[in-house]
Structures are given as structure tokens and as C-alpha cells.
Amino acid sequence: MSRVGKMPIALPSGVTMSATDSDITIAGGKGTLTQFVMPGIGVKQEGDQIIVTPSNDEPQTRAKHGLMRALLNNMVVGVTQGFSKKLEINGVGYRVSTQGTDLKFNLGFSHDIIYKLPAGVTAQVEQNTITVSGISRQQVGQVAAEIRSLKKPEPYKGKGIKYEGERIVRKSGKSGKDK
Image (cartoon, rainbow, N blue to C red):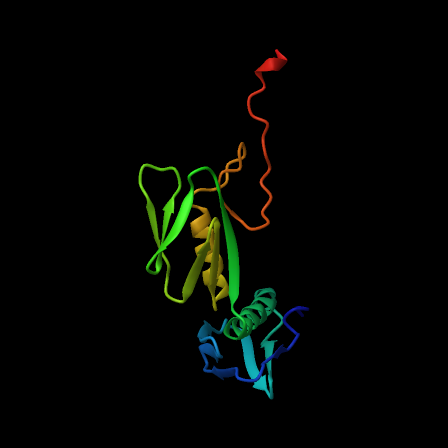
């Protein structure tokens, strides 16, 4: 049995769960999230806790047990606290600004890049830092990854968009003086 899967999920006050046969909806102060129930996994509410149980002991069901519990826990954390990721822009002339709900990037290309944020995700820009936030952990991570892919950090000077705290392995460059 999964160590993660057998831990109950605590429901804070103000968070409600409603379940049908096919999906689970968790609503809280920041919004509402819905997740489909994986086959072979049972989800029930007992008091102020959510219990996730596998229906059988097959390897595929055991593999989904911990995943389903982690997804539900992320939903509870999302509707109460929310999630955020920070990105840093490094490089001479590299800029980002907000344009309504969109982000406008100047990343050294011949044109500006306009990135449209999906519904449910917001971004704040402060100098060379972008903070992406929302209630869905998957959606926040996906948006941050898409923004980073616009100009990945290069290994020689470290120019590009990187996650906050990400370590870029640097290369030395040309070494023609050894010969």
C-alpha cells in the first residue's frame, strides 16, 4: 500500500468537497477545482478528512493510489493558499511588461513576444522577476514552463529566462590559447 496514499487529507474550515462517481470537486476561498476519479480508486469524506482507498491490490491500482491522494491534496492547498512560481530574466536588453492580462517579452528577437495567460493564472512583473500564481498547481507549473521555453538560459553567459534559484551550469567558452 502506498505510504503517501494511506495518509488522510485534512479539510480546513471553509473548504467543501462534493463527489460523484466520475469526479471530485473541491471548493474553497480562492476558487473551485475539479478532478476525475481514477478507476479502481475510492474517495470518501469522513468528518473533516478525505480518505483515498484502492479497490484492489493490482500494481496499476497501487500506482494510482498515491497519485490520486497527491492530486487531491494539491487541490485542497490550491483553494486555500494557492501556488506560485518565480522566474528571473537575465540578459542585456531583455525585458518583460504587462499588457492587460498578457505578458509582452523583449528577448533579443526581431519582434516582441506576446504571451496570453490562460484563465485562472495571473502574473506579476517586478523589474526582471515574473511571479506566476494561481490555484491549480499543474496549470501554474505549465505556464511557468512555457514562459521559460521562450528563451531558455544559455550556458555561456547565463542569458535567458530561468526559475528562481535554478543553477545554470556554465561553460568556459573558447580555449584556443592552449595550442
